[in-house]
Length: 375
Image (cartoon, rainbow, N blue to C red; front, top):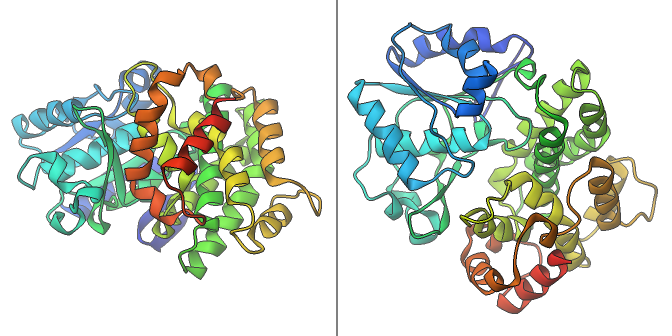
């Protein structure tokens, strides 16, 4: 069992979920709200976590595929009605981000919008955020150690709520909880982790420790993702993919880039409902080509770390990997229509991730990137 104190407290290994009662006790939490989704309840994963808690522990299972303001308020009502004093998030990035939103609004005055990063809200988020333990059941988002919650407001804007105080107090990463993940979701979430590692590594911001974590995570994800997809019971593959996901989350401090600048507004669409990790996988090659010549020797270092031959085209390698994993080739295959692109460009330009893309990108740049990603 590895206890890692970096940004937050992390319990990582098979069986780590058994430590939940002890971690809640250490935080002084006696009446937690469990935040999850109906799929995890049906699969029995939520019960595996809840069974270690008092029988009266309330559960909110209304997390939507992309966390939204209405769901934050619904979960907050349960939190207050049950007089809760902390939260346990069980699931992928949606459940964890939703729980972060509840933790924020349980201790801060509304409206939620005022705390969005692009609206100057970071400084308004205080240490009073309610205690939160995050238990990921996918290996992709890294939200269990991330300082951001991505939440779609009622007007359709998907905004980042970012502050050091938004990082969960404890992350319990138990690869056992990912063993039943279907191949398609394993692929999509695994590519999310790989994208995080690549995009933070090429961010122009200086953070040498984060660079070291990101490039190791990228190599780990490239080595193990196809094995995890091919055999979901491969314990080594599941352990390493969860570690790669964690590493991607640990490097968010550097900022992301145009991949997320594009995937965030796309994730705010009500129709079609788009999976974040799949979006990142599909968009990544276009952004890698756009950024070429603006990242120094980082593409060569990534190629070496991920086992690609010298001189390999990183964007082509990602496209080929997406194909082998059975992921869509472009946004059009995912159901994105041309008529939403102007609104997506506007959202991408305003997104907080755009500032840390290695090559400056304006509206014209995003128009070209969306055109490339549409296929």
